[in-house]
Length: 188
Ligand SMILES: C[S@@+](CC[C@H](N)C(=O)[O-])C[C@H]1O[C@@H](n2cnc3c(N)ncnc32)[C@H](O)[C@@H]1O
Image 1 (cartoon, helix red, strand yellow):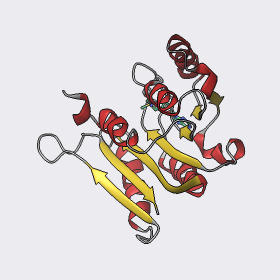
Image 2 (cartoon, rainbow, N blue to C red; image 1 turned 60 degrees about the vertical axis):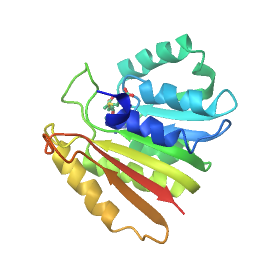
Image 3 (cartoon, protein in one colour; image 1 turned 90 degrees about the vertical axis):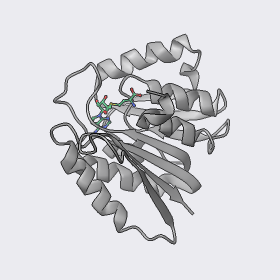
Image 4 (cartoon, rainbow, N blue to C red; image 1 turned 120 degrees about the horizontal axis):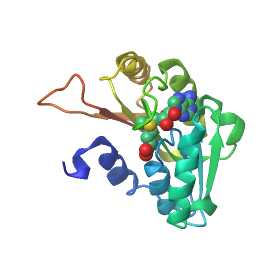
């Protein structure tokens, strides 16, 4: 499948229109590090990426990926839950990426949870600068995923459109129930 048509490819396609070198951004779910690498390359050596994951092995693998691509210097890898974002990040940020669910190739029982994702999102929304963007990929197809997706969408529908533009990109044909869904918040 064309990478643009995958939710992850779509995230990068959209965010690169918004990001400039030197900016401060957050990867809230490091996983295998592909989003962290994308962000690190987008903001460049003069920028900063705060990158969170609760799994040490995800951070180790990502460190190697960043080193190989000469991007480690602009990334702060944080072994902690994204629900503690505001303890680590104090300055306004230009973008935040959430790619929810479990670590591909890892333990499928270690998943993001709606309650902690929501806590993190609310802190991230406070940190986001005007004109900034938050993207979320949610996976309703795995156990626990639908509950998380429903909780997030319920919250997002309640946001004032005067401050937040919230958009959704999802599959219309084929297996719609299990397909990932892309959500995006833009702050006025
Ligand atoms: C789908 S993966 C992320 C994929 C990744 N962005 C990439 O480019 O490969 C989800 C990740 O979220 C992590 N995670 C789960 N709960 C978390 C939490 N509370 N805070 C931060 N990361 C968490 C998991 O350990 C897993 O590595």
